[in-house]
Length: 160
Image 1 (cartoon, rainbow, N blue to C red):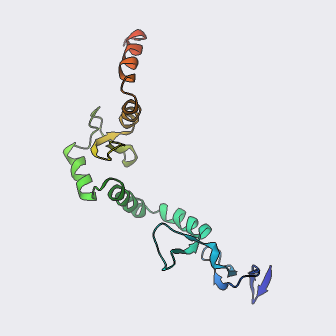
Image 2: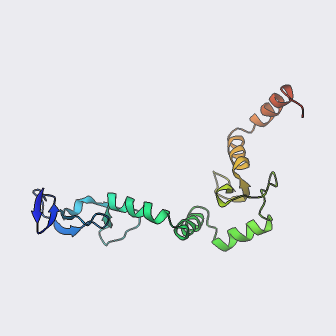
Image 3: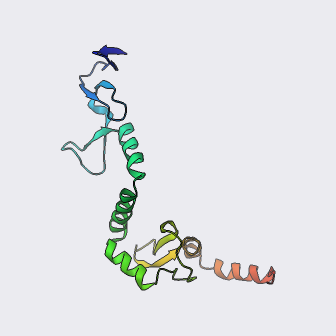
């Protein structure tokens, strides 16, 4: 470690870097641009992110703690993955009266709500609770298991 002024500084090595202050720590370092990572969204003209990977992860952790950020991310993902807007999603939820399309149980929180879709075509079906979505996912991959499971439950019926 070298010193520049009163801030501890990491050595730059053989390649030329630039002095930057790392946001979360305030540490001044001679930063080599190869530490910037390629991001899927081209943020800079050369496709590099503004932050190094560690700083970007820390920013993500801090942002995810904010409810508004989580909500915006949820609707952005719905749009990117399934082509459904926030309004379309909320309309679909309203049409189902905020209950699961299979078991008709009321959604207790937003983590219990799952958008059911065909994994091959990505076409949206309905909105399900976590348990029904899990069950549909298993049975969709092997429909013959429906009869097998039903026969198993009939054999081992406990009675209420």
